[in-house]
Image (cartoon, rainbow over the protein chains, first blue to last red):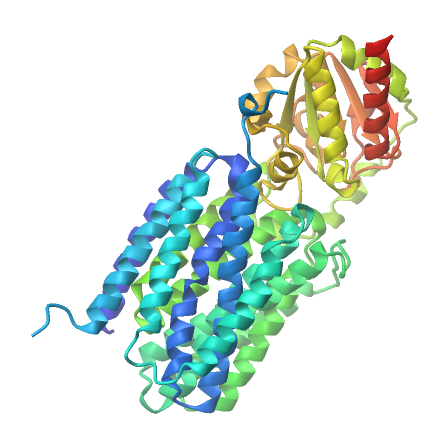
Length: 98
Length: 464
């Protein structure tokens, strides 16, 4: 078993706990933006796709990588965009007295 | 000698990005700081992407640029869909995320074949299986939500056996590959079989279970990203995947609790099958109906009103009329609140977004646990397009399929009004005894038209 695995497992477990504690506190009001935001964050796999595309090791890896870049990047752009659109709509009643 | 190697600088940028991602979710805890959270996430993503583009291993940029442009061109329209379409957009986004993770895993496999260790092969196989099944599963979910595919559960005999054997086959192939990593044909078959399994997994699940399914798929998408992080030894992927995975997991648990069902029940027991026994003991009962004029008179005379919206409200596009009703009642000094069940809508929190879009202030949107203790003080509970989440049988009738499901206790309010097209039962085919209570008035009609009529009557009454 490679030593990297253990250190990655550490990070995974700790990030899982942090995620659990942080996300537990998210108001149920915002569960939809939560899901679109975590999707946008998850789209960080784009960095791995960029590297595999750019290394240009074989035509296959370049094509697969490029499709992955497009899929992940669309998620990133769309995810941040729609999350912000949703959050802009949440207003308190005091601010909009006629 | 420089202080940092280029690789260390990139790793440092990734660390900053991971920290910003955690802050982003931290700030999402309240609507007042949530937009800062999005900004934090965006900055993190930009730092990570820019640092990656400077990576020394990249020798060719043309395909990266093309792909980024295509991604942006697909992503922007996906970010601009109407709020009613957010559930299917989310499913598509799970699919894109899982597709990216699966493709990178596949590419890594082909690149690394000559020197694949057993351990690495295990990681890649797991990652590719998870990514592939999430991809097709999410596409099916999106198809159901978009109503391209039937919303009703699609079931056949021996379904679970077939699905599980397909998954078993994928796992066996993965095992074989661990010992014979060079079997590229088998690897492709494993990918196809995993894709088939994803479709089989979601096809039998009905529209009403979508909030749980979409949360579960969210969790799988996160898991596949985290597994990819293990394959590539990339900590930022592990962190982002763990955050996404735990978020999806927490939401799935909330959704399951809100429907009083277990994971296995959602995944392997289609909801449509329980109903037969429930409808059996039906007797002739009468419900009282009322006109918009009568409803307006009662609402106008009330002190406190709770509105309970369901998915039917979104289908009828009635949320803007509901806002007019809210304005009209608030102007008369009536206190109006919204009671929102966790599974109202087609994904977690969907109803809140739809009401916020209609300009209803979020401090009036109450979740179930907050609004239930206040129910006895409510003069009127107005139910628009919700059914099973208001059915008192969930509390009182141990024989009911929804027994034990937490509901909004609208029957505790002094008067109950239900806007509904007809007396037909909800998705689960369960009769709602709420409709036959003495305090209940049925308002038959299309939600949008009926609420509009009430608003008009209230306006007329105000002038006269």
